[in-house]
Length: 217
Image (cartoon, rainbow, N blue to C red):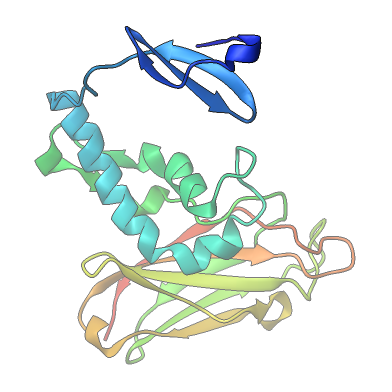
């Protein structure tokens, strides 16, 4: 692409021969004319599309969590939390053909940052339509504070839906989440992270942790 200045002629707009003239941000440019946008349906391209589609379905379910967990941590300026999630978790998608594409839920990143995460315990699903998770308050850990807010996100892969817990103080030591009645008998995956709320760490996020899976009763 080249810029140009034709003075009183004020440049060229539209197609002229094999080039197209146009104006952008007050400057005049020329680019090669592309007669037809190519969109080959090669095996590799179909595989990429299938992987992108599958991860996109998961990303939509994770929106409540990543809007908090990935806030301010985008790897590129002005990148949305959704795009950040896709970029960070592309490595979790595998499959050699579109029909084999799958997401490794244990590898997903829901949150990212410098704050120390709580020491989460195992996931419990022995109470009806409830997921319980314990964690170590560890307010004495560097940069941690008892007022930090801890979140747990529960994801149901069959329905591609999820539930984010309410914020719980790090000092509380446990989180309990109610899940939809339709999830009874279904497998879930849980993720946890913390958001700083103390005087010295306010706004900092912790990395997320995969907490495990269980079957809702």
